[in-house]
Image 1: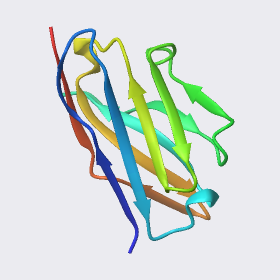
Image 2: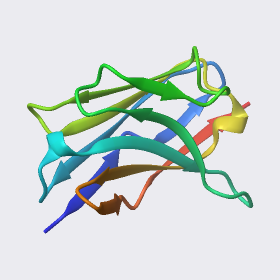
Image 3: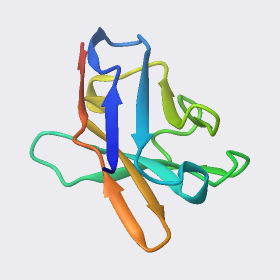
Length: 116
């Protein structure tokens, strides 16, 4: 059974940090690329960051670059998103996505709330 389970969300003050994690199971982790997406209240879901098969290749949206860092551990089948210098506009549900072998998997998300 394929599963992507996000964790690490919560409520933090502006300027704080959070580390999100995505635990994957039920498929060949190293054959998939991963990305984090987010959806703010009343807005469409948007890409945050993307990471390639080995973790050497990463890409970030402009709002994430310099504050957020995506990484993966192919030995533990996990993907992380380290978020620093958080802002109220970072509030939203954060989703993990896996793409590969013709499949597209999504987790159910974890809620991040940044207070001003």
